[in-house]
Amino acid sequence: MSQTSPQDLSETTKLRGPGKYNVIMLNDDSTPMDFVINVLTGVFGHTADSAKVVMLEVHEKGRSIAGNYSYEVAEQKCIETITDARRNAFPLDVTIEKVD
Image 1: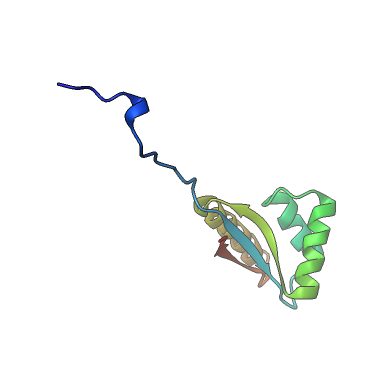
Image 2: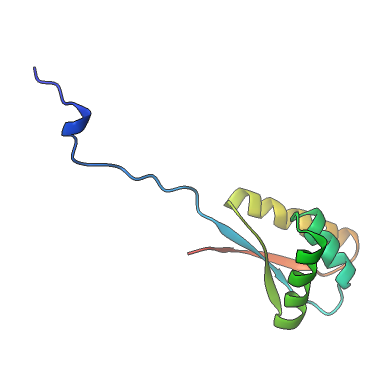
């Protein structure tokens, strides 16, 4: 019976990490800028300066990336954001997009 050593194996398997997903914040005409900044700092961990940059991009371009996460974390961030917004009677919305 012959044994195969690791050096004899010609095939290697490359493992891919979990996919990444962007949480996209969408613009609306009702949610105050201060509330958006608070969500970006509280839920997404932005600094005040980076939150302001994202908030302005949402305001000017209609959408911006709030963060990049695994699917499960992105989904949780969306739930937290929408729950907080509705609790405060704001229509702020977010969505998830897969990163290619």
